[in-house]
Amino acid sequence: MKLRKRVVEARLRKVVEICEQQCDFMPRKSTTGAIFALRILMEKYRDGQRELHCVFVDLEKAYDRVPREELWYCMRKSGVAEKYVRVVQDMYERSRTVVRCAVGQTEEFKVGMGLHHGSALSPFLFAIVMDQLSEEVRQESPWTMMFADDIVICSESREQVEENLERWRFALERRGMKIYSNIHLMWFCT
Image 1: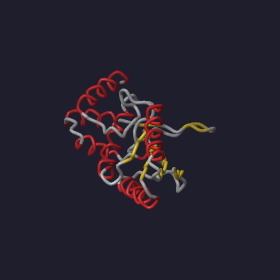
Image 2 (image 1 turned 120 degrees about the horizontal axis):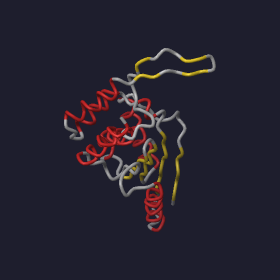
Image 3 (image 1 turned 180 degrees about the vertical axis):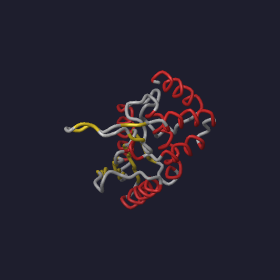
Image 4 (image 1 turned 90 degrees about the vertical axis):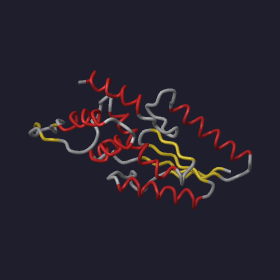
């Protein structure tokens, strides 16, 4: 199954183009590169003596909250051939789990939501969902960077960054996902 997931991932990567703002699990992208890009942006604003406001947000239980129907929709919208959508659906339709605790474990039950943890395919599937989700928000928020379930939104004013944060919150909640609590870091740079 692991090999099958890697083959499917490789084929999906040939078809699906993920936006430049997504830095996680993408070829030639890294955490260091994302931090460097943000630092360059901040330095340009500081050198130009302009304000830059950034908000850092984290998604709550990101992999667990992806609705399967949303995943199928995003795959299709990204141009994935129907046969690959069905292959991934087949992998997920048969997913079952048990819960282990101190007194034993539960009966096996079907899992109907979320992405598989530890799967080689899940990071790219999540990137597809986030790419489609960000497409509608991206036009309003030109300085957005994503690293898996972490998002950095930057704007020239506090009001703009708060508006863009609300756009993200709305887009996420419409899809059954949400920002981790109401706590996020707002950063002001001059």
